[in-house]
Length: 163
Image (cartoon, rainbow, N blue to C red; front, top):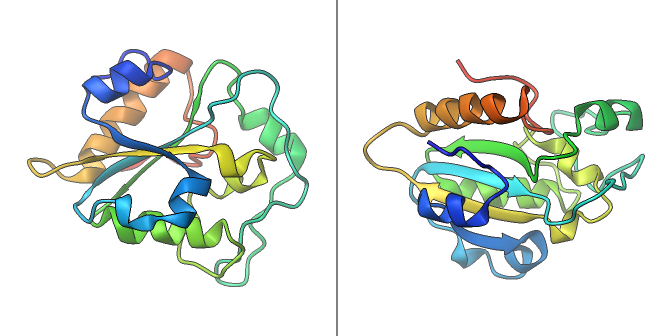
């Protein structure tokens, strides 16, 4: 399992690929695989994050996706570059939904919504690991457990652990 979530080399050794910015994927979504798997959203910038009171995220079931700056600051982990860990039975569809949400569209992607309140949201990096032998939710749970072991709590934009 991953011991250092801040090491791109370790993530690559574990089987994560892609590592494209949100901006790059907005312009070419064909790079995203169709298999089932897990994906990460990574903030490549170090230092104090800059948040927007009103992010670029769309809506989901008529709900406002924005949270208070206070909650963003509270959830932020200064030493962690991984902001979100997600899973899907079809990576391209799920990541497309995430990207559509980040373009202000109504989408079926509520998880990870706080990343769209980063001022540098277009520079955030998305990578993925297709899986065949295990269920994506099983790997996500293991990754979340490893992340908690390293940082003491869930990633910034993960609001609840998986079952």
